[in-house]
Length: 127
Length: 373
Image (cartoon, rainbow over all chains, first blue to last red; front, top):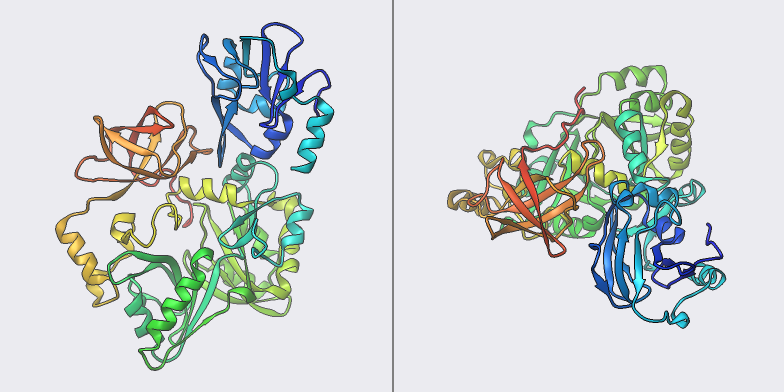
């Protein structure tokens, strides 16, 4: 399972790319593997604002529904409509094709709440 | 998972196939081997192999076996000949369903009964208690001695034939839907029933634990001719939902009657008295307030167990089972709704996590079973 080095991760299994503004957010390969076939993705509207840790959408497999949690506080400026119309793209490529939202962060990101690739890998290995 | 979850004799086989294991009905069972959607498709187009050894097997024997089963079940056991089975239910005196099950008549004084995993103990205790009041019948629970393998799909006959001698192969070809036949597999006595829970043509094999692995591998060896693949409980659920087969615990429970659950075709009120009959007669006379409907979503969103259903803003019932419908496309499910408020053809709204999504009530089944072909 791949966890790209350039990304940050949360214990709720989202990834965030903070290299450019707006930041890009998606779910990790581990989350995708745990869910199985992803059949439905529900995302917020452009313009919606969320606090860090707030549920901003849902991802459904054949069997279960999981909430998506914001890694940072901010405003949604773009959503991946292609991922909504083709949820399987999350399985094929959770980090590129399967990104979910782009967010304009509200304040400076609290880096202490995020994990790097190595720490996340360690976290899921223990799960 | 609880440490008390039982493992079927095929547990290691599932692990070797890379299965994701989940607790279900007190057992640790494979939910998926690769992809639920692919597994679903495999059963519809080729052949799937399911370990459903969690299902319970009871034997009812004795000169009063027929009279006993006639008394405790809703269908008419006297309609069965040797080697024939029927879908039925056992009820509480108030009409609520203890379980739905299949009763096979092996011979006049011997019935083989297949029940739901999570209800096996409850059913067995209930039947023991009922049998204690009657002479000439003995109920035994053999669930832990039997493995059940379901072979389902258009290529299933070819797969099962690989296990059989020329003589039994000929018998298999004349086995009709809902019939059962004794077989020797690897020299050991087992049973093959032409039944299933997928809506496809197929079989359920009952084999003693000792030959479960050999039977599994014997079936899997037909892969190059049949395309057979192991299938988990995830696809079993989407397959049965499309065919509108009920799942105990989701679609009905101790508080739902078979009339409400939508299996009145299996209820023979005219056969004479049986446990729960009086309650059903009263319920029928008063008119049902709940009835099982099938629905398909008109909008995105997937109905799930427990979601509320509205008609013109009024609450009319709840979703019992819901999922994507891989063969049909879109999503849909089964819902227990008030038939005085809604009818097939109506547009209703499903509350999907706070958002009302439009759905239409459609005739059952969603997918027409090919079990008799």
